[in-house]
Amino acid sequence: MKLFAGNYIDGQWLPSASDEHIEVADPNTGLACSRVTSGHENDALKAIEAASAAFPAWSKTPLQERIAAIQRLAGHLGDMADDLAHCIAGEVGTPLKIARIVQTLAPIQNCSNFIEIAGTFPWQRKIKHSMVLREPVGVVACITPWNFPLHQIVLKIVPALLCGNTVVLKPSELTPGTTRLFGEALHKSGLPPGVLNIVNGLGQNVGMPLAQSRAVHMVSFTGSTRTGQAIMQAASATIKKISLELGGKSPSVILPGADLQRAVKATLGGCMLNNGQTCNALTRMLVPANRLDETEALLKAEFHKLAVGSSLDAAHRVGPLISAAQQQRVRDLVQSGLDQGASILAKNDAIPHDGFFVAPMALSVQPDNVLAREEVFGPVLSVIAYQSVQEAIMLANDTEYGLAAAVWGEREEALDAARLIRAGQVDINGAPFNPFAPFGGYGQSGIGREGGEVGFEEFLEYKAIQLPLDAAE
Ligand code: NAD
Image (tube, rainbow, N blue to C red):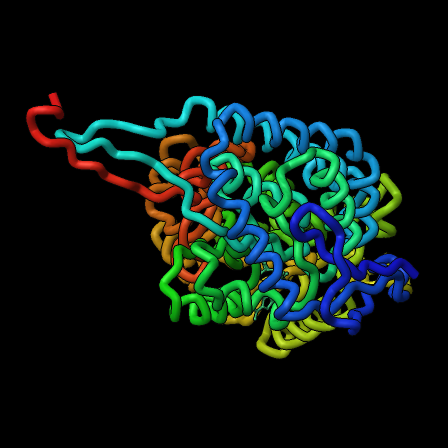
């Protein structure tokens, strides 16, 4: 069994102050495969100290040197791409092909995207007689989830470092192998000691002290809405900048003018991505009531083709969930949904016996069903019938979340609907993901945005220097 005991602090791997460990299981077999330190408050404090000491010099380092450091980091991640993809497929359960393209190559490419943004960013501008500067916030705590482990790390630490901040990263305790590979790439990239530190462990032991610390100037968090609330509360005592990327219950609105077959197929693909363990998964499919039977037939045909099995076999499109707890949670939610009157439209029961698999399924639900309201985080699609376009928009917005949405229909009707949906991103007719566009949510999906220039700016403060009027001309 692999042991991940240490933390990367001040440029070196150090043992944790805790000698307690958490066991992590292999999602494909269900058997314990590694142990990771459960972490200690003193680890977090040591990392904050290192990041604080590194801040004055790093924040003054010329941008070109910061860019060169990120280029080296991206280069080393690129060299490890195969290992990273296999590790993520093995730890998260992401099917290998998706682990390679979405979980590994996309984040490595995103390093270059942020370098491009940094290179053209307006760091200084005049507003009347003020010189307005953009400056790093200070020490940033980045707390990340397990579902897209490398992607979430890159989305935070790369813009944070390019902006001149120093960072304490607290990755998910459920993906210690991915964290270790990332740490190796980081070490090789030769960033000055203390600029980026990694502390492993449980949220309560490590994440909480980071959120509470007076020496941390910003917390950038991605994870569940419940943890986001706890972090916001903990951070409030020291008034720090906060960015929260939380859960979702994103609708796919299939309008009367849509190509139903294309819309159903793509919505299912969006829902099943990463086995449903995706924050912006399209989990509520809204269809015209008079096309429900047709939708059911299309879903049955698609589920028939959905190959479920080991995530390490490139032929599979759906793998296991990450943990026994997640598997149980999804099964319980489905049972509650059935108890509340949901009916199964299509299902694929051909799943392995061992491991944390859940049979992918689509259910017809009423808008007040738990499956229409709660984030399931598994391969479960809820189908809701509507009578009018007005009702479809009302149902799309009938959620506490607001992370993402899709609309299908004739271009103008789809655009009109997109304008009415309260969500941070809306894709029309299968338009692809844009890493330069802001990503984040309305409502309980969070505060702030990640990605692109808007996400980059989250890691900057404004400073306005007023010039005497005679010098301002
Ligand atoms: P989680 O909230 O359980 O954990 C996220 C991180 O927070 C982990 O590193 C965890 O150790 C830490 N943490 C847990 N409790 C903490 C506490 N009390 N104080 C400080 N840190 C704490 O979430 P998860 O299960 O890892 O991830 C799944 C969730 O993340 C889903 O809800 C998903 O929608 C969301 N997510 C959102 C986005 C987005 O961009 N909006 C992206 C990916 C995932």
